[in-house]
Image (tube, rainbow, N blue to C red; front, side, top):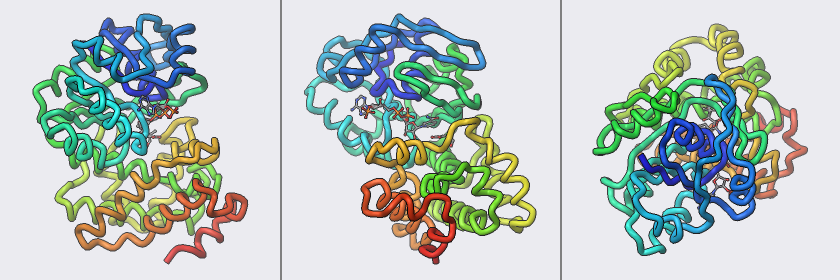
Length: 341
Ligand SMILES: NC(=O)C1=CN([C@@H]2O[C@H](COP(=O)(O)OP(=O)(O)OC[C@H]3O[C@@H](n4cnc5c(N)ncnc54)[C@H](OP(=O)(O)O)[C@@H]3O)[C@@H](O)[C@H]2O)C=CC1
Ligand SMILES: CC(C)(CO)C(=O)C(=O)O
């Protein structure tokens, strides 16, 4: 198959590099500097399949040039959710036919946004549960191998999953996008905003009773919202989401604390949550509004209160924009607890 990736970051390099080394035709649209570096040095993918150097990829820095090259079966959104709207605008502005889009992004609102601009039959929902670290431009390390979910409902869904499996990426298909994407969202919330706000590793969050209570409340809000929307949790590749939801909803924290500390503390391998990486790299942008913030927005639409996710979203957005002071929260759980209901 011919894949055009938007973004050669962690996910783009990992999935695109793996597909290229399995013999698929892969190109990327990226910013000029990383594109030039990748064109010079190629991609390096370190995974359970070993270390692969991949040179046989094409780099574009402009959407029109990429679409003029033509013949793409799939365009893959491998960018942060805060870049989705602009990326769709760039594709539409070329006035060229846009291929079907596969979103591998976290968050639950990317596919609806893409569908609203291009049509529901132009988008495939995907989700990556493997954790990928990016030590350098075009260089990725698989921190925890799990797999990729692809939703049925598009004529190309099965073919895309087969291609990902050719590349040993552990793809599985799912009957519906909603439960798959919301189940991934639930796993993304774990220790994510709290770790970023407090500059603490996830293990330290789960071993602190007070912070475990915050995590439990945040996850319970998400489960209540997804159930109100009609999405029951489903297990994802390498990720027992139903057991997680059951434990969060039913078990007392004295029981969940040792389990969560052991299992969730290391669920991203050595990788810190993306919300932590983006805040502390000073990126000035955060996906929190698309993760915890999505729980709040969808909660409002179905009448489910989400006060904990609302505070986590607003504090982390404030830290990202510089309207909150990072030092006043760094390793100070009591500062965050004082803001929470
Ligand atoms: N890393 C991981 O382990 C996992 C990540 N995800 C999700 O996958 C998505 C991508 O994450 P990740 O790969 O880590 O992010 P990265 O920041 O590593 O990569 C995104 C890349 O896309 C580039 N980009 C931004 N806008 C455009 C555009 N319009 N056209 C082409 N390229 C563009 C960015 O450039 P610039 O930096 O210059 O903006 C950046 O290089 C996110 O939604 C994330 O939550 C899901 C599962 C696991
Ligand atoms: C690593 C993983 C799969 C865990 O939620 C992830 O989605 C991320 O860090 O963005």
